[in-house]
Image 1 (cartoon, rainbow, N blue to C red):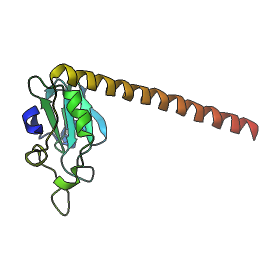
Image 2 (image 1 turned 90 degrees about the horizontal axis):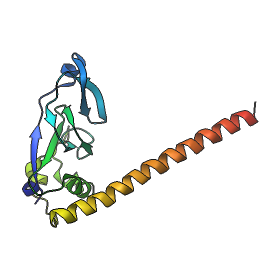
Image 3 (image 1 turned 135 degrees about the vertical axis):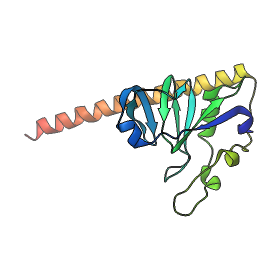
Image 4 (image 1 turned 60 degrees about the horizontal axis):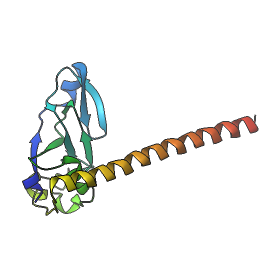
Length: 162
């Protein structure tokens, strides 16, 4: 089960606290890094998951020193677990069945933590995670090339019709 692989942590940090106190450590919100804070609350890799709001279940991966606001949980790996492997596994989960609340949807680790997961030995987890990370890197490169082609096309079209 996921709860056998991960520990779940919460934050009480609010957006207003962060915006009132600028610093060097990134602060993650629902859309990624949105500010920097004078202190960090997390040191190490973790999976960030939106626990309430319209984007519940959206995942991010964070490394180094950072903080998260209260709408996120951060999940850290237990011993002999490759966090990147779990991150890629969790991307395939459908969190819809774990949503509760009619106004503002919520998900709870106590619920989705019972999700069954295939967890091979650590070295195999690392190999799988490395392959998937390589594919992610390739996708980023290809998106960058595509964006450059669009810019080039727009420049040529503007030059043509001036």
